[in-house]
Every structure is written in structure tokens, then in C-alpha cells.
Image (cartoon, rainbow, N blue to C red; front, top):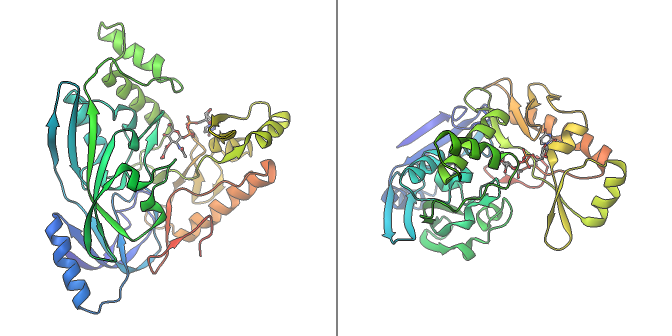
Length: 358
Ligand code: EPU
């Protein structure tokens, strides 16, 4: 389905005002082949931009591009053994509903990734991760269309070059349209990962309420849903795009030096003598929990999340003002540069790099 001059302010969870020249919604892969044949033959020079669930993008007020929305649906069971299942999930499936469905089937591995907004096709782009689990722990392959060469590819997990909130898709914007994701999920109900924060104790409570001694994956999922609902705003009620900044990774000696002045600084050891510092803590200590530049303010329960208090009216410029202000305050206090996580889309659909809007 092709729409001209289409309002995307409801199609991004930050609820930024955005009017796009053309939007093409795809409900099967053949439609993409057909559209691309038409696009090539029409000397049409409008750049292409792929928009999934809109939960990790910052859109411009005017987007002079052809926006492709992969909305293909379906969850297919490929292989079933005593130990695991292989499933293939179409890009347009809602991620959280997928997590609920797999757990209800007794297929485990996604329970820690409950309540992450967005659609499945975008999950590999930033290698979604939460509570000690990342998508690449269970991802087998990605089927994707390479827009510059008009060819379909089946990419292995190593082809995707996953990292912390990173992949080759993220590093090559406007290049790939992901249509399917292949996952291997396990069936061992005793295997859980609950070491992060309060997850173990909340999951334990759910297990005991149900007369069991040990938490199962469904208990972990319920615990994570509770924890996220307490800390993270529901985009439908208070527009946001999740973590706005990445947790910066600094070297151990810099971290040790900071500990002298800030004994409570929160950091997690990483390989190669590096430390991942909690950006939410840095922002809170800079006095900005609940602060910002109106209407873009940090969330009162989790300073890493920026929220939009003027839905459908605030623009990217408002976000830039708040982002720069917060990043500068953190830098002045800690000499650490915190970097934006969501994708900054410019009017011509090119992607803004680093923290800069241009
Ligand atoms: N903290 C503060 N003040 C704050 C926020 C956090 O002091 O305002 C401290 C917490 O007390 C805790 C530490 O910072 O000691 C870490 O906080 P939290 O557990 O909330 O996790 P995070 O590092 O802030 C990351 C992900 C989240 C993910 C959680 C749980 C990034 C950029 N963000 O947040 O992802 O849900 O871990 O795994 O890595 C998202 O992507 O939208 C998202 C929410």
C-alpha cells in the first residue's frame, strides 16, 4: 500500500512530528520485489528509508524519502527436537507478543527480553538486550533484502557482526530491509538467567505463589515485566524511545580515578580491562533525573530515558536541545561523553552520526 504525504507522528514511539513524502507498507516479500522494480524503472531519486516499529528512531519534521514499512506477519516452526525448537519470525511480528507466545509454548530464551517495544525485524539492528541476555544469544540467521543491489540474502549470526547494541545493519543504515529472523529456543524449564538486579527475588516470589521452589522462565518473564513497568514509561502514555543514551565504556584506570571522587559510581566489568558505566546514574548524579529542556525531559524513574511531554508537536530540534544539554552536564561533571542510542534520521533520510544532528 502506497501513501503520499503521510503523517508518521503516530508511527514513532517518541511521538515526534513527522510528515513523509511517501510511505509503502509491505505485507509480503513479493511486494518488495515489485516495488523495487517500479522504483528502479522510474528514475525516482527519492531516498529509501526503512521504518519498523519506530521505537528507536528520531524522525525529522519533514522526511523527503520513500519510507518502507515491513509489516509481514507469521511465526513458523522449522524444527522441533527434545531439546530445542527452531522458529522463523516475520519482521512485522510485535516483539513482546512473540516473547509471550514462545513462553506459552514452552520455548525458552526470550523471557529476559520481555516488554521491549517494537517489531521483530528491528531486533537484530541494535541487537536488543536486557537483563543479561542479548538477541544474538539465540539468533541463528536473518533473511534480508540488500537495497543497493536488489538482492535477497540469508545472513548468519556472524555475518551480522553483533556487538553491544550494535550490528552491521546499524553501521550500514538504509542498506538492508530485514524480512525474517531465525531463532533457536530451548526447552529446559530449569535453565534461567536471573542474576541481574531484583530479577531473582521477584521471580522467586512468582514461583512460590504457584507452589514451586524454583523459578521457571515464565516467572523470570513476569518479574522482568514488573520491573520494566515500574521503571520504564509506556510509550502510549508518555512517548519515549527507551534508553536514550548508551552506557559508556571507559578504561579501568579512568574508572578507578572516578571512584575516588564518586565512590558510588555504578560500573560493570567488561573484557580487556574496560568498564561499562551506568549512564542513568551519571545523569541522575548530574542533577538531571526528571530534568532536561521542555518538552523533552528525562524520566523520573529512569534518567536514561528521555520522554516527550508534547506528543505529536515536539520536533527533532527539541530533542537535540535536551540531548546536548544533558550530555554537556554529564561531561562537565565526569569528563565522560555519553552517546545517543536511537537513530537520528535527517530530512533526506541520511543518518546523523555520533551525537551531532548534522
Ligand atoms: N541508575 C541510576 N539512576 C537512574 C537510572 C539508573 O542510578 O536514573 C542506576 C541503577 O540504580 C543501576 C544502574 O544505573 O545501578 C543500571 O540501571 P538499570 O538496571 O535500569 O539498567 P541500565 O543500564 O540503565 C540497560 C539497558 C536497558 C535495559 C536495562 C536492563 C542500555 C543503554 N540500556 O539500562 O535497555 O532494559 O539495562 O537490562 O544498555 C532500552 O534499550 O530501551 C532499555 C531500557
